Length: 480
Image 1 (tube, rainbow, N blue to C red):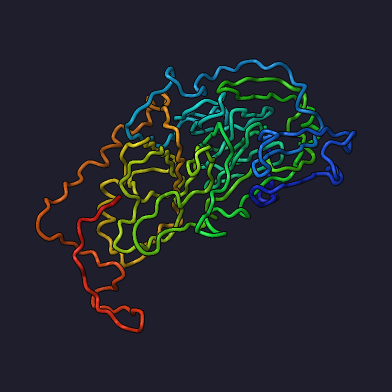
Image 2: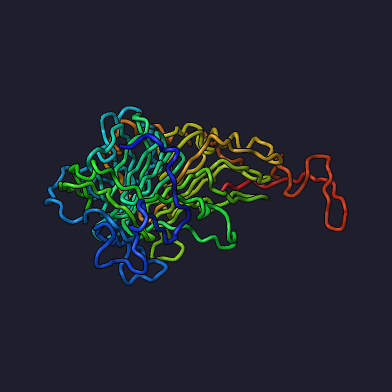
């Protein structure tokens, strides 16, 4: 696995573009896709990510020009990995319990990326191309002389610890913590840790559709994840020596693994063009939008990528990020509110601290399923109700949390429910909330009325008038 010169890797930029790249000039055909004879004896091969007849805006495909066609490998043989099978009655359970897992600091040693995949929860069927599955990963070893191909769906990786070098058929991706990458269905790849140390993170696999940028609506033309910040590899064929080394191909289909042997490298693509590509994105480039006056915006305002379903406005899955930002809402409970959701929320913490959970640790994760109540813990609640909301508050640059918001209610893998890292005391963080005072009489509050300046101050009104501040009594506040 290549580890040198990663800082010199170059990328193409954009999202949804028709990209093209050639490692050797003249290897991309001009004016056609499949010449009678390709330059240098290369083979033209199309990789389709959608049906041929999909609408043009949804049509995904890439033409590869490679030294050997992908076909020609030996027969596939089953590889035992029953834990990777989709959730069903035999390996998983439905539970309304709020769940949290502590970081796994030990496992992963001596494992490669495929061996280090640990399914957490999911729903649906890869054979029916419906639903999703969520994993964590932890590994130390590079995928030498073998590659992985996921025929079940797209992989979205969230890197939490340890930078990755991902070799794909279209080129190289260096993906560091606080970055994410998408590896589309059928794309062959190999993953390694660039420093040889433990690499750890999260994976969202969607069995249907593909990730795209969310519509911005009234936000306008700019904001959130900007297309120009996505990076796509350039052609990087293997060396002559690597070309003739035997490779093992591991393919996931229907949640089962199969292996076949081939006598050439799968990473022999010299040139390519198309819009079905792997890509990466740095979450620190996200341009957040938020309320600038009152109330807490819904978390959908922080959507990075979405995988749409057939129901308008409802996603198969969303990637949502909670980045460093200013919090300025006045007379407002600023952390995420108490909530019961028709969707399902799987959260992870990449670094720093999460504003609504004082005890949530980097590398950990939590799951709140459909209509299970959740919200800030008591410590975070007390802190948020005590601050002076007339002053802005900066969430530190050292923090980054994310959420996979998914539509289908997940089944939780029994292995995850039996994990020693499952926090059996998680629900204790919501114990101790006092019951609100009995109604009757006038409610009191030290909160300042909306749009009023600090005590004894004046604020300019339309027409140049001045208004003296009046501290108004507020009713018992609702946190959503």
